[in-house]
Image 1 (tube, rainbow, N blue to C red):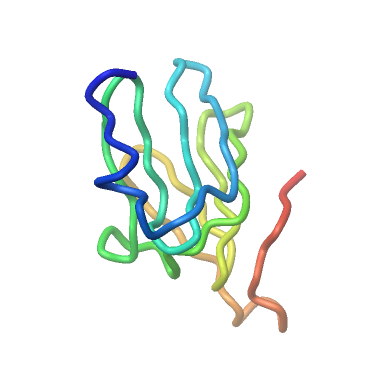
Image 2 (image 1 turned 90 degrees about the horizontal axis):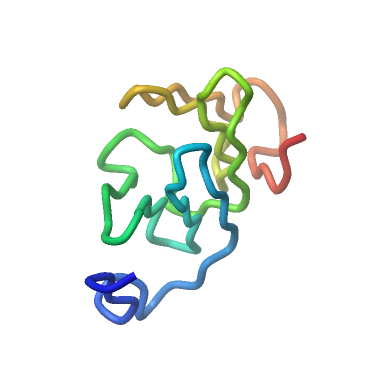
Length: 101
């Protein structure tokens, strides 16, 4: 993982979950910095700027159909092909999603 600097991207945040995708990318869910996706170097970062409801990510799961589901502090997120779809607290009373089966 040369080229990836933990200090520059995660010095103030902790990693809450890790998911390896079918294509070998690592998806890191952080406590305040969103999702970091990387292979040998960072491929991209998903935050509230890209449409996430929160930068606090508690769980990540890749579905059989290829989309990723993210559990955040403010709801459930479906991410597929650069598209973010949020299922937020209007669907249920407790917006924090800690686990996805």
